[in-house]
Length: 375
Ligand code: TLP
Image (cartoon, rainbow, N blue to C red; front, side, top):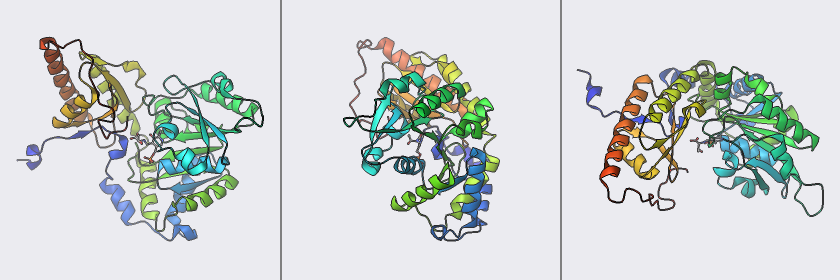
């Protein structure tokens, strides 16, 4: 008898950051040639930086511990304190990085409201002001592709070029938060380097869909990356025998990029299943990559999350009535079918309770900050 049969199943869809390194990845890590990377001695880190720069069509790249650090080093290297950056109002840089633009670079954020994270050159134009001593100096525009809170949405290349043309006209620099650029490339067939071409700097993550345990890289011109290395040290991101981690990232780049298509198919399967459930709001056609966002009614997202977790399906509440599920390397088709079955049972039981409850029409009362999950 398979002893695993007695172990309750857990399907973890909280994020694509939860993946565990595979056996082959662990072997690559164990066998990595390493050195002190702060002294420039780690050959595996150097190979990863060169490979990433090449994939992104940039002159150079620098390995950093996290996507947050990659983005924040870019902001610091592009700006001076008192400058302003333009970000989409739900961008990770603005929404999920702990106020770092203000804390680490002393910059202000000017927000542009996008549609599922995507905005146009005219939106950018509308927040720009002429050079004048009264105004903060706008310096940098940031785009996120795919867009996390947009539901893994894709930036059309034509929209990127439109924003880039406007930015150039106003002498602004451009940064791409490409934590999930790999997903965008697989979903559209547009190579990463084509997406990256209009940008001065690009941050990519190895620790999301690619499944490496740690690490991101920031790419740009040789001169920009030399400056970024200085801020990496200043921010405490200089790592020593980091080749162990770079080996995992290199393995992920070579073996886990194409399989992202499986995650996207799983996300579409889950979205189609969710669209059939009572009390669940979702536009399945809006699911373009590996992130599935849906709305719940009657019960709060927090209550859904707790009920689902008790049944072995882990997701995140991203708002009082909003839930996120992210397909990933550790989740196969059978896991997704299991998760869809659990969601169907929870939705049906919630619908029954709603019908029999005298308070059926009341809105769910959700205490603010009731969950530790990012919202
Ligand atoms: N996103 C995480 C959480 O921080 C929300 C997730 O689970 O999705 N850019 C984008 C677009 C991201 O989604 C993330 C991580 C980052 C940057 C930051 O990467 P890390 O976590 O490595 O600092």
